[in-house]
Length: 506
Image (cartoon, rainbow, N blue to C red; front, side):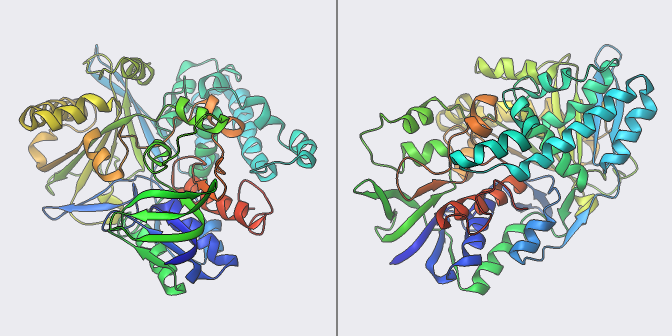
């Protein structure tokens, strides 16, 4: 088989890459290869005992991207708060609740009303963040010499904060009340990395996009990739599932196709890999000369952590809407717990403490309907121990998994949902070993490369690799960045015919 473009992986980035290709090229010239039975990657829904569980929480405002791709996905906006922060006090076993409104204006007004001494700092913070987000319109994905003056002039805030963590960025506004800092720090949780580590630009942009609008597909998150796939197939593009790529073929220093597990070869002018970065370069490429700068940077990259996802099926006797769980996200934490958890992760350990904990809880069924569900997320979790334990002693693996599950259910019951345990009808737990199996990442990483200042923005691993014709879609994690990544790749391949070399769709 011969195609002009082969895309490895039918996640949101892979599907968006094909949609972008089809805007300016023949849809029959591209093929997507997916090893799993269904598309979507990390964005999916699974059913157990009549309960439907989503693996993703929120879609920010992607209306301009869906319009550009001419895709109609039925989305439901959160009609309550976008998120809530539960700041726990273990000594008194109570939690103070801070709501985060579904719009930037409402959220800003809430903070000003409750913290009038910080009014000027709050206004300055939101104004600055919006202006920094707007500067993305002037960034180029692969800036040439003639673009540099324009970027320096139009992207001053992005440049000034490009090497800062989110906490370093927050400190610039000198909030008087520490609660303002803690509330705004909630957005680092959505980046999967503590504010002491996550790059400021990622967290602030995630905040702006989600406060413009936060949504869920009305029939569950699997609806999103399924709709993208149907759009592609209606145009004549093949999306082949249960099809595993075992090698990217390189001829004369150029990517020229892929080898499938079946032994079939698909030749191509371009290859785009959306799979785990380390897997792409360490498993799929048979290259002995890895001494150039690109491969050295790949070797140094640290992957994001893995985690636990605890899925609970509940009876109808508990009213989670009355408890406020019809919002997008609920974060339960103690002061400083998220960074402390990452300090344990650095040592290959899991932080389990009654005095220091961090987790999130979501109730998607209140938005999408169906039998009542509750999903809990715990990050970070070091993968090695869990992967090895599952392989060596499955019974001990199950015991350890249930012990951790009971610990976090207890915390949820203690601080957020009284008498939760007696309403649980079904429990399903995903560990790093689960993520390794389904995503195909050896470290169980949920967000691919770690979004730290040394590997983001101008410092990130370029999407155009050192191998001619080979690209990776690693703009950032999340649905909005994944869709933007697809546009960026085809823009590079086409010489700017999609976005004129810009980093985001205007």
